[in-house]
Length: 185
Image 1 (cartoon, rainbow, N blue to C red):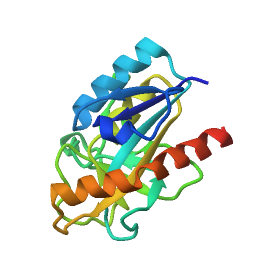
Image 2 (cartoon, one colour; image 1 turned 90 degrees about the vertical axis):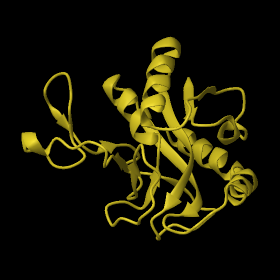
Image 3 (cartoon, helix red, strand yellow; image 1 turned 135 degrees about the vertical axis):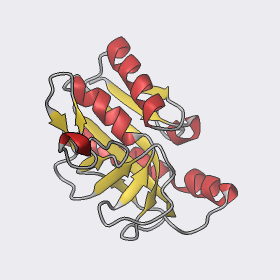
């Protein structure tokens, strides 16, 4: 099985072995979507993972690793077309809002081009890349998962040093979570 891992930084991919295709996208949903779309076309994976860090909205704790049921984006606003916030229009003119990911989870990930600074009751965690990766996989009808290590709590100050420490000391758990998902496929 060909497995594609997309992360914003090479440090997030460090715990994964060479049996996976690893792509560093850079930060944000646009770069993540572009990198994922390229890698999907080039490598034709069977499954795609958006891996990396996320901030908790309060339910998850620092060090938790979560796979999310769906990913939403607050960045799209087509309310002038009477679509709910977070929706977009596909080339087929169908609307799309939340993208379904892991059916065994109940957690929601909010993915935005802006760093989350306030907690929201709409999601359990926030990142900046998963929606772009998930959208690229969705358009190609490839299963996608978002597996994120909680490195901080949204709304609480964290230094770059503390973030890096949290990522380095806990990222091995991401690889274990991805392995568990793959064994279940």
